[in-house]
Image (cartoon, rainbow, N blue to C red):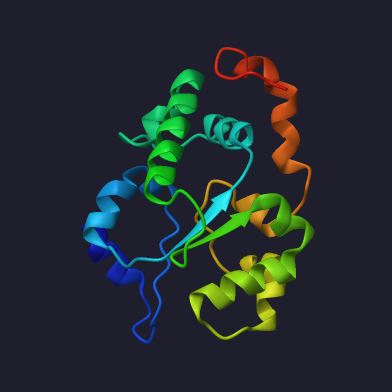
Length: 173
């Protein structure tokens, strides 16, 4: 079913397939068995930002998204995913391109050029106008409105207003 859905969306002339499904990183041990040569772009944001952002989303309910119904389970799920990921990829590798959100926002062009190089595709200046381009087609992400606004630094620090929620899960320094 998963591969059928990918095949329906894939342009027949494509040589690269990008699956932007972050929840799949929870199954990285399994993914490595299925696709031992697969390459990944892994986005890194502050853990509190990721947890809070997902907790505040209203996802279509399924088994995977149920983890975000309660704050404590959102924290536990994030911890589970990251532990699994870094067991498989504990550091820099030629199979993973790590993209840090702060770096992406403050140094967009050099960061995105590094990602494009990692993918082995030709640079296109249209990449720099992603927000404008997104207005011309359907964006199917929970944060579609933010995609159309472009990148900003304020988004990833909103968790600071909710630090009290994390008291039972981490020591805040």
